[in-house]
Length: 122
Image (tube, rainbow, N blue to C red; front, side, top):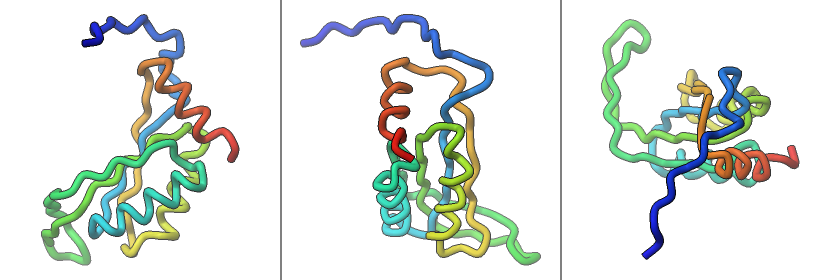
């Protein structure tokens, strides 16, 4: 069994984030899979995580609604976030999809490097 190692402090830790997560809600697992596959294939995201079983309560057109949705979390470089969100909007079935970013101000350097490499040809 491999011994767990304590990560070294990350020299890339930066209050001005170079990486972010794009949080998206989708109508179904199939829609989240389709969007995630496209963004990873196009190198707009290094990774797509899909979390089924989310129950949403929201206001839409003056009424309180509830729906089962699927969460899609994309990992990318901050400079690609706008393109990633635009691509999500173009592929999404909702009129007004949730697609927002959360900065990654710190993380394992090897992981952040992997994001850079995986999205570098855009």
